[in-house]
Image 1 (cartoon, rainbow, N blue to C red):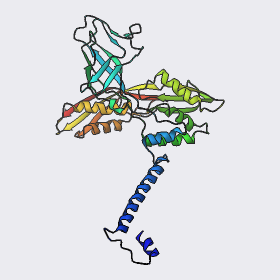
Image 2: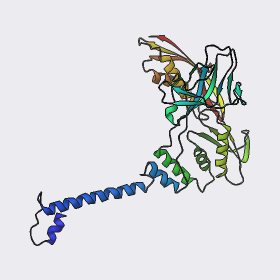
Image 3: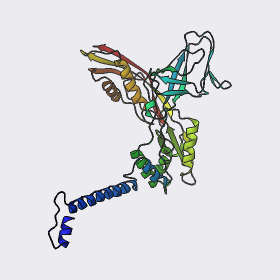
Image 4: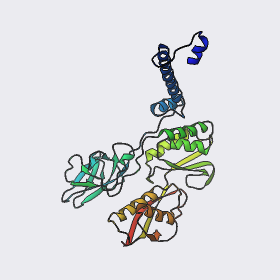
Length: 364
């Protein structure tokens, strides 16, 4: 600005600190920088690759796409009592909490459990029975609900005949709302699949139903797994191995909108294969803590329960999980999967889930 002004003036211009011209230049420069910042903000919010949060949501809504919401965690809570002389009922909607009270979990309906009572809309623990394992879902959606075992132990409101609650196993499948990065990635798949009746289009339709879904698509395959031209099989899992009928129905509706004309399809849950693990952890001269066995079991259980449809269970991966759980382990030996020292290769359309995990130790 000083050079431009001087070139147009016939006399020497004073731009020293404190001069009027210097003050005008600095005021103009501040306004220019502010306008440049506004322009950068506008450019950032008008492109999906640079916008974030609510700006990215509004950008995607122009294309009919919305962010996938958070998914609440789920699992099993054990309700027990000291005196089982009378029957007790645990109604659906009963709330239990973590010891610090920050997270609440609600009892949900599962009509396949033998003690379910539809008339009473709850679970009836018969007289003479000390405890019952009941399904619960976190009231707050998100990964924060994936609490460790033994964390849930507070009954929010009085349940006559029930004294205690705990969760023997961790709660799982809680997922935070879709991140900006994942949202952009799904948008790319959404665009590339709009005009194509391809496996990619089918897969994009399935994973857009909700977060955490795993899918395998078998073309020219009937619902019974046999070859059939013009049909395709879709195997869907939500991480539990037992997706609900409502979820499978929602997936089928999404596929119907993009499937090729003249084809038929079937949506099924995966087959579940339980894998029992046993191993020996050798500590040598290292000190062994009481919690080491539990840590190894949790790491191995997490590895098995997070395998995808058709994934193989590797013996060496089992050893790796043990080392990661307790770095002080000197050696891991005698690893058996379902009683054999071999990898477990599941049949087609099968997902692995953890069974019993027995950890014996020596040394330390």
